[in-house]
Amino acid sequence: MADARTDQAADVRFPLKGRRVWVAGHRGMVGAALVRRLASEACQLLTVDRRGADLTRQLEVEAWCEANRPDVVIIAAAKVGGILANDTYPAQFLYDNLMIEANVIQAARRVGVKRLLFLGSSCIYPRFAPQPIPEQALMTGPLEPTNEAYAIAKIAGIKLAQAYRREYGLDYISAMPTNLFGPGDNYDLQSSHVMPALIRKAHEAKRQGNAAITIWGTGSPKREFLHVDDCADALIHILKVYSEAEHINVGSGEDCTIFELTRLVCDVVGFKGAIVTDVTKPDGVARKLMSGDKLKALGWRPKLSLRDGIADAYAAFLAEHGADGGT
Image (cartoon, rainbow, N blue to C red):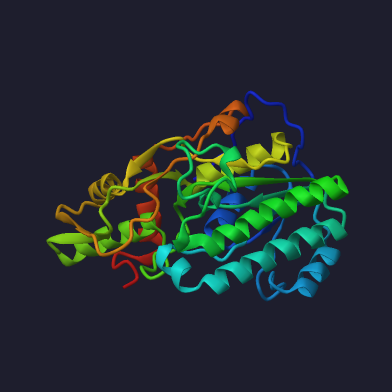
């Protein structure tokens, strides 16, 4: 679980104590982690579910903001999914995410919110970006086709925050988390990201006594992962100390191959069988490691190792879904 941590190496420019902080998307994995982390900040937490305001509906968002008057907004709300979901539903991923970010940012401006943090994704970067990926690589090349719609929506969110900053003088910033995992993750194999999919596959293979599990692609692509509670801690640190138009990467600074990750997950879960690669399925980008230089300069480091993070995520999976994994 996340705990209160001291801010290091950077002065707090924007203290949260006593402020009304709206976490848009509080029921998602990142939003829930932010809610846990904000419990130690002595701020007033604001949340709303879809029944109170559908964030894809402009009038509903504006009415809620007018009634609740947040001082700070964190946009963690988004339509998310893995390669299969992104490739199957590009219109939904593009439309829903464009509407959410545009409606929330505009409503925030209308009610006088001067501090806003928009959350994007590492998929904003070009398919063949330099490694590690610096923030300046944005829009320097073509995107990965399998999640292009989602990436375009997130790029639009960055540019929208920058435009509001420039035109209206508002302190709106953006952060780009890497691949996240942990409590509250999505374990549906049709729409999940790689980490929760591997945890569920390994768990089910162990429970059923299978001889092997199968992973998509060759297993050679390299990915970076960060536990969601570490991400939430980094985001609150950024909210307090960072104020630049350019977005900032949020990651662990380390990566591993999907095959190495699978072996680590299997070890944590206790599955002893073989790992089979299905080369008929896509690999996606060969490597995606974000530069963490800007975040490190602000004095933040992750607290959980990858193995410890996976162990925490697996414990949360068992608590949320039971020993049968929800199957």
